[in-house]
Length: 190
Image (tube, rainbow, N blue to C red):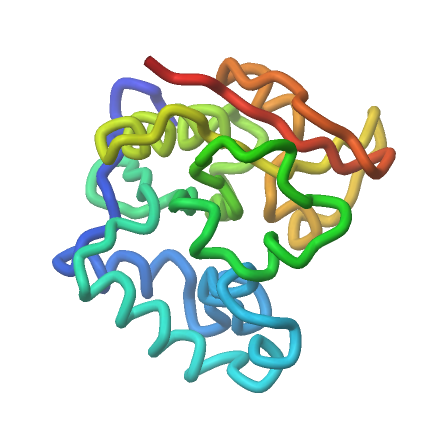
């Protein structure tokens, strides 16, 4: 993977097949289809798999541009979700990730990198691309909810909100911490 070959594009209706190819039959991780934060826990469980896929496809087909895809040549290799925080009711109801203040923020809620492209710095590049997309759509602050593992390792499936170090590398700073391993990080954009 060469940085020069990597390209980033918003998730638009014409890129739906690329999303399907990247996420695979399992929908990224266990039937998620990037719908975890967009539903209550019970709704998410009831919709796992094909129902979540259809719900996410409807969001993309509306032209909402709910995130950014990374490509190595023509191959989709990474995903970063970003949208206004109020589109994620599960965040709104979280004690750990409760709002820091009343500022309107956009939230980065999910990163997915294809095997073979992990641990090579792609996450911070995706975060930068998602921040640019949010700025283009009027965001002034982008917020994220990564894991801060302090040198520990978790299986890849458990770090889908990203790692704090990738956000620091992309210019984010800690805004709050209500759990030892789960900071709220922010970047103000002009």
